[in-house]
Each structure stands twice: as structure tokens, then as C-alpha cells.
Length: 386
Ligand SMILES: C[S@@+](CC[C@H](N)C(=O)[O-])C[C@H]1O[C@@H](n2cnc3c(N)ncnc32)[C@H](O)[C@@H]1O
Image 1 (cartoon, rainbow, N blue to C red):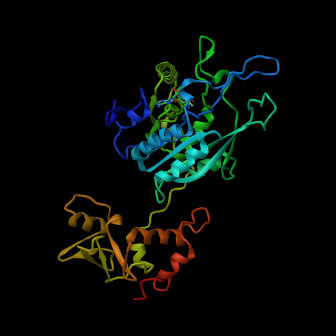
Image 2: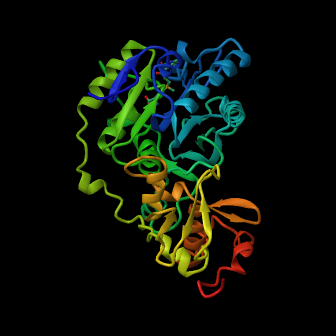
Image 3: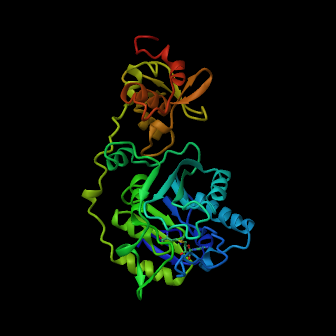
């Protein structure tokens, strides 16, 4: 069994998540799903009109003395989650009106970047028995990347396909967990807030890849682990109640992973690669100009055949960056910069401009605005212009 820091991959760990999170290394997790205590503040038992007691969430783990105490708890686990999340990773946090606004502020204050809020519309919500408020028929999920400019995983085309070729929307109609799906022990619900597997299916499928590690710091009955395993992902669960860890262990042990063949994202369009030579042909990079390392310590001259010269050494952008870094291999796209208007511009950025203009001019992927091209356009018609 492989390990991340002190924590085994595909394991359920009994204990407080803040302490357990500390045992994971920085930047080690691909996806986090967190279903924390909602701090529901239910002070008394709830009864139906026929006087039967409602099976509401009244567990000890959901109780906090004050908002201040709840916020302080959330700040700690959300900060730790940010630390362990890979730069390409994302976090999903689910909550209700009781806590989600507080959680949202904390998420932004820590430096995560909110990508969407998803409304889980319950097709079969529990009624408002007292008839004193609107029927509370949804929960909210915040989806956020580690920071503002993170390049995160999102299987856009697969989500669109799941939604009959219409863009997947931010309101998801999914029934609450009941019937066969409910995990029971001696006929009783094993967990009061077991989430529907469909919710996790959509989350894990949209924002992770086969083989990724999915962390759930509030594992409960193990819904995240069960879906992760089925979808060929790895999981790590933290759960402070021993009973729930046992429930989750037994639940996950019965799950059989789908075959890799069925899990491939065949519908996601593979982006055609732009080679360095194409940037030269289109004039984004001039034959004879110098490219630089980020600290400007090294420079190289660009030849017509897209090779770079450093003194007597000649090679591709990759070979020459590896040569200067005294490594066997290196990705030259991350290493070289050009001088434009007295500032350094990465060649990878030029490649994105090229992709955006010539390969993918749709609105779907409109990462770069017209304004951003215009600065280069005058001089970038092709290699005939010097
Ligand atoms: C809302 S439930 C999660 C339910 C889960 N998503 C499922 O589908 O079963 C929250 C869980 O977090 C656990 N928990 C609460 N505080 C915790 C903490 N500090 N560390 C680890 N687990 C905690 C509770 O015992 C509870 O099982």
C-alpha cells in the first residue's frame, strides 16, 4: 500500500481531521470533497403533524457552542486542505444555509478561488413539518481551486455528454439518499447524513482523473471512498467516530472498480500540440532573436529550423534548457522567455495565444481576449516579417 507522508493511500483513518491532515505532505492531493458538520443548531426535537418524531440531524459531532467556535474550526481544516491540495487540485465543500456562507468567506480569505457554486436541488426533500418556512429543498456546494490562476482538472465535454449534449448547469437535480442505497446496521440508518452516491459520481467524474487521490476529511459512511473506488480513483478518509469508520470499511470493501477501458475520457477533445516551430512560422518568435531563462542569466539564439544556440551547443528548446540546468531532460516550454516591450513573456504563453487564435477560437475556451493578442499581432503575421 503506497503512502502520502504518514497516511496510507486507500485507507480510512480514525481521528480528528485537523490532526490527520497534518500528516499529509504539501501539494499531495488531487481532489478534496468535504461534507463538514453543518452546525444545524437544532435545539429541540422535531415532530410531524401525526406526532411521530422526525429523524433529524442531532448528532454530537454537529454541535458547536458559537459561530466563533465553528469559524475557528473551519479556518483550521480549510487551511490544512489548501496546504495538501496540489496546485492543479480542487476542493468541493457542501453545506446548507446554516454554514455555507461562513464557509464561503473563509474559503476566499484563505486564497482559494471559487469556480462555481452548485445547487443540489433535492427532488424529494423532507417537508417543513411546522409550516413556518419555505420547504428547504436544496444544499449548496462550493467548488474552488487552490488559487486564482490554478490550472485545474475539469472534464467539460464529458459533463456536457452526461447532460444530453447541453452544457452541464450549476443546478443539479438529484434525490436524497434513501431506500436500498441507505447503509443500515441492524435495520437502523448507519449515518444520519449519508450523501447520495450520484452527487459524488458527478463531482469525482468531472474534476479528477483515473488514479488520482481523493481526500474526504469528514468521511462519515464513506460515500466518497465508495464512489472513488468504483471510478478507479484512490481515496483517503478521515473520520472521528470509530463506528462510522467501520461502516465505511465494510461498505467500500464490497465495491468493485469499473474497468479502466470504461473509465477513459474518450469524449474529451485532445488538444493538438503546437510545436515550437509553429511559433516561428507564424512570427510569434523571430528567427535570430534571443530567448532567455527567467532570471536572464542565460540566453540562446533562435535558428530558422527552431533549434537554439548557446555558444557551440545546439539543440531543441527542451535539450538546451536541460543542458543549462545540467539535467537529462527538461520541459523547455517552462524555461524560455522572449523580450516584449521590455518585459519577459513565457514562450508557453505565446503557445497559448497561438492555440487560442488558430486551433481553438471558440468561446468555450476563451482564455485570452482580443486585447491580449493585439500587442503581438502587428508583428506576428509570419516569419517573412522581421
Ligand atoms: C456530514 S457527515 C459526512 C457524511 C458523509 N458525507 C456520508 O456520505 O456519509 C460529517 C462527518 O464528519 C465527522 N466529523 C465531525 N467532526 C470531525 C472532525 N473534526 N474530524 C473528523 N471527522 C469529523 C462526523 O463524525 C460525521 O461522520
